[in-house]
Structure formats: C-alpha cells, structure tokens
Length: 80
Image (tube, rainbow, N blue to C red):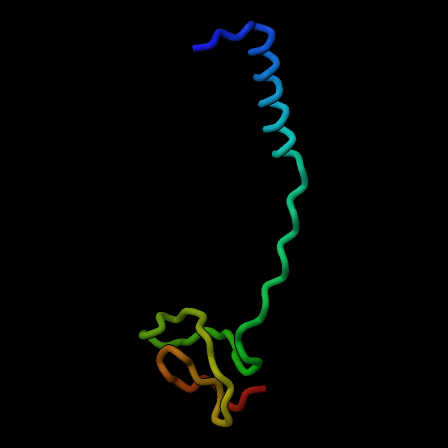
C-alpha cells in the first residue's frame, strides 16, 4: 500500500469534509407539482360503513349522490 504523507492525508480529509458539508448546505431543488390523475368527479369523503372502517375513501359523484368506490354505498343526497 502507498504511504501518504500526513499533510496529504489531512488535505484529503479536509476536502472530503468540505464536499460533504457543501452538499448538505446546498439548497434542494423544488419538486414539481403533482399532476392530477383523477377525474374532476372524484371526492374524498369519510365512508361510514364497517367495510370501509369509517375511513376517508374516494367517492364518485352520481345523480343519486356520492357513491363509495370501495363498497358502493351511496352517501348523502345529490352532490353539490
């Protein structure tokens, strides 16, 4: 193995520390906004059935009301 002089080893260590700190302090790039993939007629609403465990699920707007995609229950009246 090649023996390094103490000065060269200290210089390499200082360079590695400087690069590490520069990478940590450099501002992160902003992430692009998420693209909407769902149709406009989708509503997130709490479904109060035991099958859906009273959790928020996706509902589709229909003339009868909001229909849960998981269990098919119609929640509420006509969608506003």
